[in-house]
Length: 470
Image 1 (tube, rainbow, N blue to C red):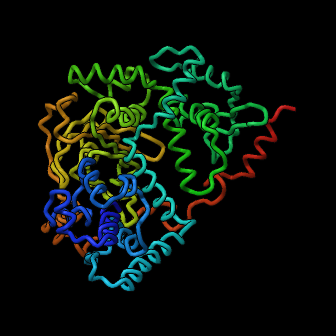
Image 2 (image 1 turned 120 degrees about the horizontal axis):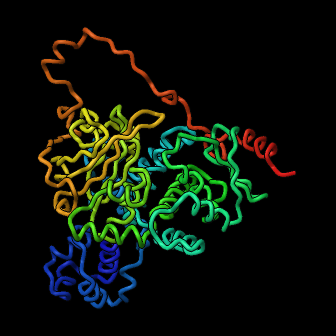
Image 3 (image 1 turned 180 degrees about the horizontal axis):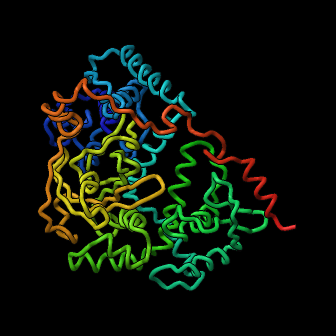
């Protein structure tokens, strides 16, 4: 957009590329690169350009397009760089003066129509996956660090006199009491819920002896987090997913307080022994919680880019985060959930080991660079999952496990990497076998509808009626 504004103001003033270049001491080709968005100018150069064009610097930095044509050009360029356009396999359209305005309008309109058709699947998994892809991009922009949620956690912990270190079960109950809630463990919690909060009577209902959570503090802290953050009935999938991320983040920030966790991580980095396992043990939390929390703090406080993966034993990606350039498999919408992970990646190799429950370290050469990763397997009611944390090769010197000699090479998404069987194996069995697939129950079903997706509201209200005080 900056380049379009410079071009618009230059032509408006009747200046050629040569004239503007001479005024700022740059070659015309360099000015052209600025206008086409191929080079990002320094602030000092922007000041010279603004002076040459006789406009305030703020005029160049405005985010709106200077004209309808410029807005269309920028929109088309952004669309062509997006995952949807690249998956279509179409040749890129050169956006320049030679492209007629009516053709530009038609191409952008077609782009809108394709997006509209995809968005029409409002009650299908596509809409939720699209929303999740957008949310993951926002998390990447913030390095998965939310200072406002850290402040909430710090305030709550100070209110109960917690001075650092692990958060005990009693301290968790103290947080609930401080917020005006009593806890009630019941055997008949609605099967579509983790907890139910009775805001009218200040009660939080939790399941008796629930083994679906590896940490009994998590569901309570997540319920309290939603209350603290003022969450209301979600408007759509985006709102629902955003609320879930915020509640999970605040719950983790309470269990692993920022000040204590950062002090431990910095000390570990100074001694070149960073380890998710050590963070887990220091704060008495599940491995996955420690891995998530590490991604919150690693970039902001340790200057480490990082990625996280949770992969099902069947090889599909369950959830992930990255700001280190690793290329996760994705669909045309940019969604990664359910995509097959390369067999050569640490998150898949760990399932082939005899000892699947000890930490495993590996270097992997990929199309986007070499990454070191640590991974371990955990069980759940949905099967086994690997939880992995990794960094680019340049940052591995700070971690335990960097001395590993395990190394693999991945050329995915090239099908010959791991998605196509070896030629000899294929020749032996192709046409002579018939596997019976085990599809997921939700393969063809729409996502649950309702204010809270998947929740049976009638069942919840009947439950509250049964348990409300007289």
